Image 1 (cartoon, helix red, strand yellow):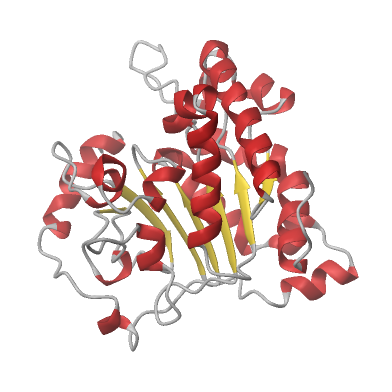
Image 2: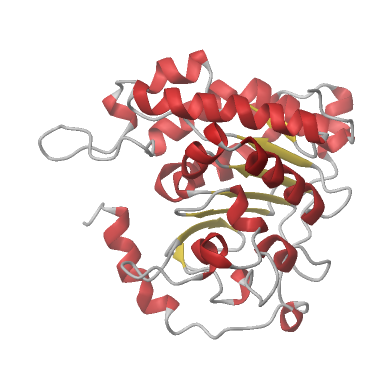
Amino acid sequence: MNKNPLKRLAKAWVLACCTSLLSTDSQAGDFQSPDILVLGDSQISFGSGPAFVDFLSDLESNCRPNRRQKALLKKLDQSKIAVIGVRSTSLHSWTARGGAAKGSVCDVDKKWKVNAGSYGIVNTTKNQFVQIGQGRNYQFCAAGKAPFETMFNPSYYAPKLLILTFLGNATTRWQTEPDLTRRDVRLTAQQLPKGLPCVFMTTAPAYQPSISAKRFEAQQNLRKAMAREGNRCVFVDGLTEQTMAANHGNKKFFRLRKSGAVKDPFHPNERGARHHLKLVAPKLCEAIFTALDGKRPKG
């Protein structure tokens, strides 16, 4: 059995290449919007997709809500969850109306032919790998519009809770370009539907402390930018002392070569992803309840 996710991406092209391109308007009658949508990068495809679905499917057990919080959860159908992770993307990929940034969402991957991992109600096949722009559930690409502007449509994706989880691909941008960082935050606020409860959580730490150090700085800068721009989404730190201590140098949370060496230091495997969600659960749950309550996120 081939356990290499990238090789499985290529096999998924057999399905992806034969899927008809449908317009968003044509899907109003047969598309079921998720109540909870998680949108992120390749960490979802390589490990955290199933972990997110399971965590969000049982928020009562995983978050232990009080009476008021239980009332907030009644707004959500926890059986209607979609988790989508697109490799080589960051937040600005979803707000771009053209160029390479939008292309990372919409262009067919030249090597693997598919660019995303999909889980939950929008994944209608046993194969989790899809190409954004192909198939009725992934029509996020239209000329002159950003993916956010295309997908969030009352007759298409109209979630009651949105969780965004990005970091790695924007590390240098958010480390060194404060103007672009604030622009990413502003465009996100402009393009997300008004009133949509939103949580933004940075992704899990890498295997190597040197990688996490750069990402931690980027995370700090992004949080400051969100606070400065008014915090459209409730912010959750994915990189903390606790999560970094859990991942750094821990081979059991990363894919290995036959020799036992770490093959992929950037993407925790499913075991690592589940442990990560357990560690961030208190803050993530608090953020979800704050977002659902409609309160202004704290700086």
